[in-house]
Image (cartoon, helix red, strand yellow):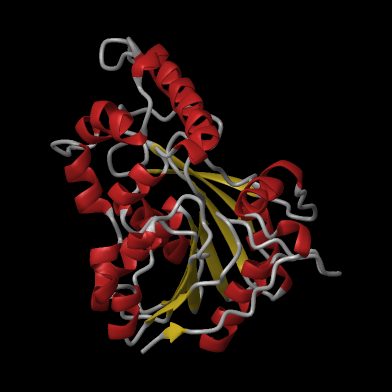
Length: 322
């Protein structure tokens, strides 16, 4: 019954508020001493994915996947890569399609369930380097992607992938989309829609006959955006079909490697459906840890190493596997 009843995370007093936990790292945290080397790989459909490598000459490595509209330079990505580098593991930051600073070639982009792209990255990394152990870490929708991938693969997963950690994961996409429609999350919704619009306009410059931002200003929610863009572009019948097929929650029972899921109970993005207590209790492999505080990809902590709690927790979990 891998349900972790007592989390070790205790927030600093000034970060008891979940919105402070969520916003502060994004705006103010700076991570130095992570030197990336970029590699562009080609996907089976002739698009490209950019990987940012941070090697330390190890025979172990971690692939880290970012959250919605994120990229390898986000502080949470650099912080996780740095934490694993300090413990002797190579780090590979996976930039989703269209998230590395250049618009991707195809009409399709990334989405919460695009496990074929993660598989392309995994295969490339394992072919390029003779790692004996590979670990996967994902944040938010990158966490959903990670959990869906290892659950889909089940026993067919590469035996060199030894474990995974997922942080602040929208395990049930539809309920999460509705959660973000709430007035209390209006700031986040407006920011995401602004970023989405910028991406649509960039794609229009490449293929104006295939995509349009006409009446984009009428879109007020993820549901509306996914209904108009994400679902039809990626082969889903509608937003509900996309959410149903891409949520990681139904795939958790298929996970066959040690996996840690960390979702703070005060995460403003996550409703109750995103805490898979039943699934964790029934699993031999999927450990669920629910700190009382932490916000969304927060878990602020101040210490001499400059590491946040979730970075130490993920690294500790992996070290106990390997």
